[in-house]
Length: 206
Image (tube, rainbow, N blue to C red):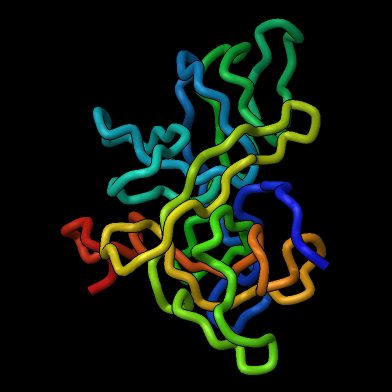
């Protein structure tokens, strides 16, 4: 069955190579003045103008990622109470937002792809493909305020060392997107250019 476009961001698959999910996550901060919404499954990056742990929604590029956003809590200005949320709406916080980010450098994620560059070129049996082992770029997409889920997806693949993710496998039979032979297939990725994994020169893994 052909896959359909239904982007959901980066879904944790393993906490490290060969291991079960650990959901290894670190607390970070979002400034209450940050008006950019951030959804569960969004890549996030450090706010480069500071060195104090603030993050924002990542933009495709060569900046090392801080990890994958998985929720937050904050003192709601309107509700006068602490709110736990699967996404940061971009407003309504009194003081800093406490964000949670999966930044385990060995974490792996399942993500849907966009273009015809990703499907395997051989058969499901042989798993022949030119993309496993290559690096990939993402597009942030449009998140859902109803579910709090990201709309991010992989949008480019190649040998570019500064791309933030590396493709390690196909997610075969993983629901919609489980057909690796057609567009919008799911793949398993790991960090390439991430704060705790970068070689320090923002050129990917050396």
